[in-house]
Amino acid sequence: MLKYGEANPLAVFGLREMDHCPPHFTPVLFELRSNPKVISDWIWANLSGRFWYGDWYSKTDQELVQIQKCAAFEIAGEASMFALILDQINQNNFLDI
Image 1 (tube, rainbow, N blue to C red):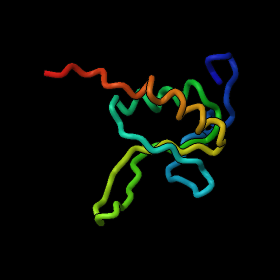
Image 2 (cartoon, rainbow, N blue to C red):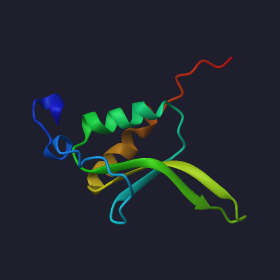
Image 3 (cartoon, helix red, strand yellow):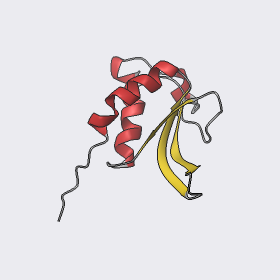
């Protein structure tokens, strides 16, 4: 991690953030309440493995399409760490008018 003075080889070669979600990644689904950049910046700064961040489409029991945000990680421990901290970084910081 760069914040500890170490360059991540995956980040140097542009291989850290994936364009698609591979089937072996561990997904964490959530409703986005903050700016999407806050979530991705936290992942880049605090985790070191490969990840995918984007929209996840699923079908409900009533045949309706549901859209959620998803962060999926190659390392299952990083998915656990992200899920544990998610409530603190995914907060609504916008003013209600």
